[in-house]
Image (cartoon, rainbow, N blue to C red; front, side, top):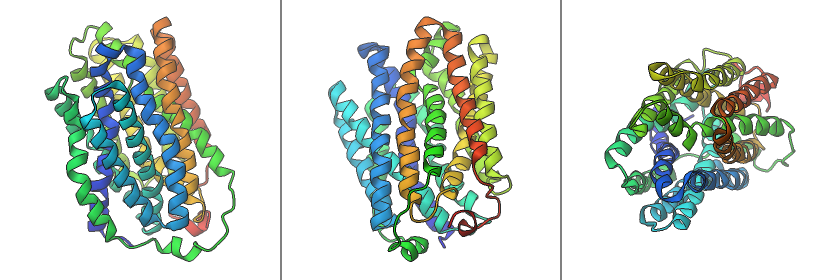
Length: 377
């Protein structure tokens, strides 16, 4: 079992992944003046495509060669992408950097929840996964102010990965391998159709979630009279880490089948209301939408790993979450195109897709208080 110190230090590396997730909307917003709304949205799409490939590939590596290899490799790739991003001088270089970063981030997401779940007790598993990723989501509290202060100097947003990743790499070399993986490493991998269910769940959930990071949200704020859109988007974004924090604390007290479902349903309702409101009411609705987008991650990260067997856990997780990120590539583009036609319809689309994800989660297993062997083996 992992110690609390080890969990905390794993979280330091994972925090870099989420720093790179949260800095993208600010980079995108800063680049939109030169590139246009569609081209700047493609920066986010490039990262999503990196997720698509990184999860399955690193999940397979972690299935064949160990969870430890997977979490070391993901951090190395994030460092490489951040270096390219920091020194980029063109749209092409920036898009390549975001693709590589996305590859590393999804490699991290595919392996860390599986590794932590396998190295934690049944009654602490949800909180262990939640607290490991909590540090990452709390990075939104830092990214926002840094982005506002940096203004158009978006290169600063790549700097933390360059500084911290060396420490994270050294520490991860000292971690133990997952005992569950070692026990089953020679078993034949058998396909599980549950992967397809969670692929559909993550596709729709990311379709909605990452759309909230794209240019129509900034445009809506501007059209509703908010002049400094980055500042007011940050107020909305702060709902995310608060949701993650609460979910991490409550993760083992709730049946994750229902808490995962409810977070997507309630976020969808809040998203639909956003273009119908103005002033402080709009900011509150946006905050609530982000709150439940944040709340879903600790619950869904743990819940996805729990619904997959040990042998296919990291690969299946990588496929479901990684390919599911294609929703995060398609969603912002369709959101942007639909917003150009009708703002209300565009937010209605995103809200309904979020609610579809919530309904599909009800097809998963009950997991509260059960060991991984009891749930799937």
